Length: 217
Image (cartoon, rainbow, N blue to C red; front, side, top):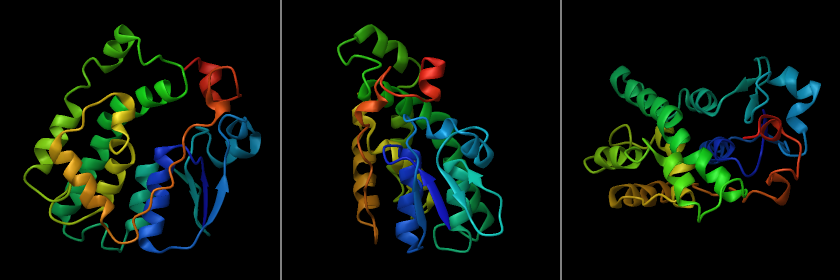
């Protein structure tokens, strides 16, 4: 099993966390997004979307997208319920993480951490946050009445949400108390680890070569 990933990506971190908690051995293949590694023909054959992470299992096609990878790894384990209703709740929160949490947190955090947006630019920050302020309160409402995102049991839904929610403060968000308590519960799980790295200097605009620089993101 090989994981192509970028150390500063929380999408990649989610997969590393799941692998650690499942105790699965794997070969980690570092991909430097800002050194042009995803722009090569070889990586394009691995994932035409040129994003990380990508999981390669023997006998299977390369699998990109963190949510898909988490579901593949969790199959047949305690991280993915057998009950159809409970499993559907896991799917629900995986979709919420991709469609709501990532747009609200990941992009803004990336721009702030790499100097693409200034922390003192109140107008730009307000524009970026417009319409996104309810994401964490919505999650807080859910977590106020249950231990974990999809119910009483820890699952890949929690791993997916934890990836970016635990650094939401770096995007300038106030994290509600129920969410903070949930973060603590996640961090108390067996074999929890956090090796998410800060963005390196070549992630700053104009300092590297990546899809972000090509699109002006």
